[in-house]
Image (cartoon, rainbow, N blue to C red; front, side):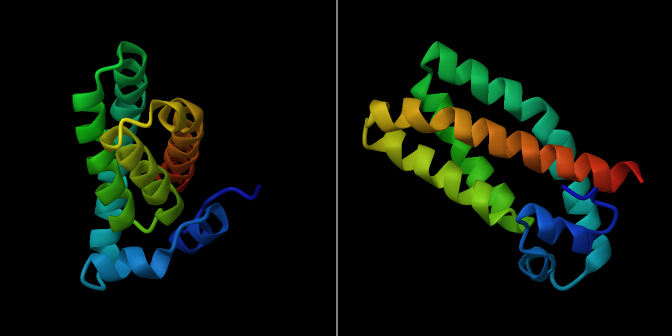
Amino acid sequence: MRQVRTIDDLADRGFDVQEGIAMCAGDEELYLEVLQEAFEEGEEKIPLIRKLYEERDYERYLVEVHGLKNAMRSIGAMHLSEAAKEQEFAVKAQDYGRFDEKVETLLAEYRDVVDALRELLDD
C-alpha cells in the first residue's frame, strides 16, 4: 500500500475525500483540521472501544460507536462509518453474536484510518 502524502492519497485507503471536503463546507483547510482531530481522537478511542467491548459495557459502547459512525462519515471514511453503524445496530438489537463477530473488523478498520491519517499528517 502506497504511503499517504496528500489528501488525495486518502482515496487509495478507502476515503471519499470529496465527501469529506463537502462535509467541511468545501474548505480543504477545514478538512485538514478535522482530519487532525479525527487522528488525535482515534489514538484515544481505539483502546477505549476495546475496553468497553471487553467489559461488555454495552451502553457506553453504543455511545462510542454512534459517535464514531458520525465522525468517520464527516471525514469521508465511509467504510469505517458503516462498520460502526453495523456495531451500533447489533448492540441495539442485542445481537451479541454479530457484535462479537464484527468488533475486531471495526477496530482493525479504525486502526487503518488512524494509520493513514498519521502518514498524511506526519509529512
